[in-house]
Amino acid sequence: PLAGSFGFNTDILATNPINLSVVIGVLIFFGKGVLSDLLDNRKQRILKTIRNSEELREAAIEQLEKARDRLRKVEMEADRYRVNGYSEIEREKSNLINSIYTTLEQLENYKNETIRFEQERVIHQARQRVFQQALQGALGTLNSCLNNELHLRTISANIGIFWTMKERK
Image (tube, rainbow, N blue to C red; front, top):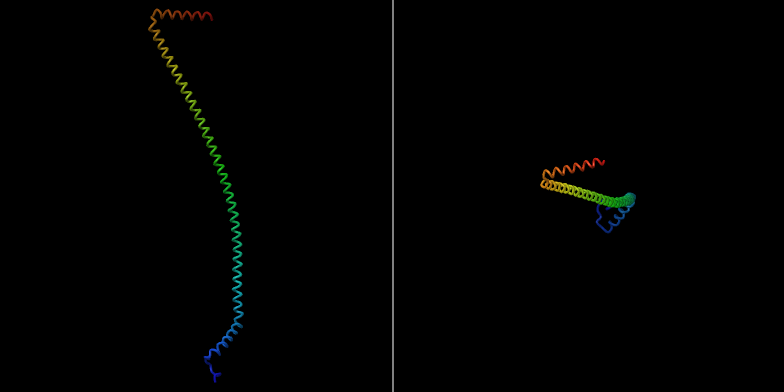
């Protein structure tokens, strides 16, 4: 009577292990290929991702080495510029100091020439003033001491000396 009808078997101990073994058997038989394909695809994607990561890592390492090489070159170039810059600065500094010493020497020479010129000018002016004062004093003395007669005799004596000198020549 039970064979002709469809129903639920409530005996858990009798139905579950059989049902489970049948379901698991069917799943293994039909699902094995699908599950295997899914796992193979997943495995291939993981391996591909690992290979890509390795390639990217190698490329990154190569770029890092190139960057380090460039950095070393740039540092060497900077050191060379720094050394050349310092030597250029020192050279300019010594040229500037030499130029300043030369300028100071020229200024000292100009100063000494100016002082010498001013001394000569002052001495010349003093001589002229002394000569003028001596001449004025002599003229004053002569004018006060000479009268007309003495003056005429002095002129006549000088004319005589002049004629005598002329005759000798």
